[in-house]
Length: 199
Image (cartoon, rainbow, N blue to C red; front, side, top):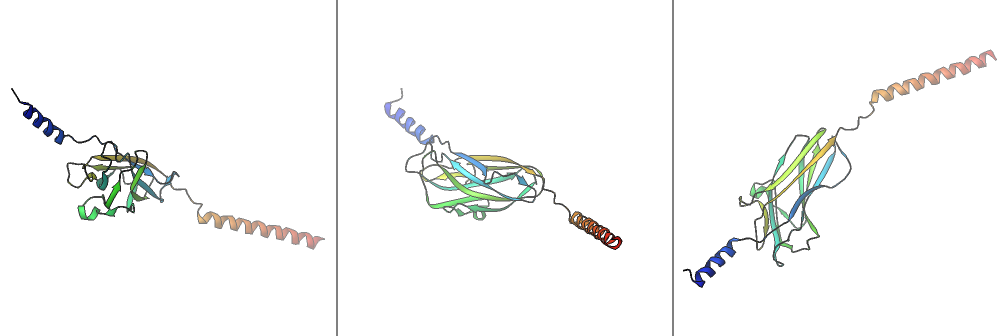
């Protein structure tokens, strides 16, 4: 029959292997609500809400790392601007998006959010454009990293509909219109001169 010490040891080991429940929400949000047209540049914010839900009050957000995937060639990534608290670690870690903060971002209320980075894109042509981010905690440099916990998995996806560009009126139309205006003006002048000669 197992003793109380054996039960206690098993309970302690079990508690050490369980992680706290973490329910942070990672999202991709367009910076501007205006329609995106082919030829436009547009930005998408990477936002973390409820970052510390289920974590200790003294914890800090230290780093993040994500891989990106694009579902079409309708737009291309032209740059990433990290929030002022985070340094750019993407090249160092070989990831598409990676940032670290020292000191870390302190625990914030659940109803507040943290912008991690802003991704800038160029819309190449009309069509649906899908973007997804994944942070796989089985990889040593992916996910959300906190001072006392982590890494935690975090994923986000967004689909953007890129509209055709507005068709500009061709320059030939304006040349044609000015020619017509010139001809009609000349005709009016001839008609007026003909009346003066008769009268």
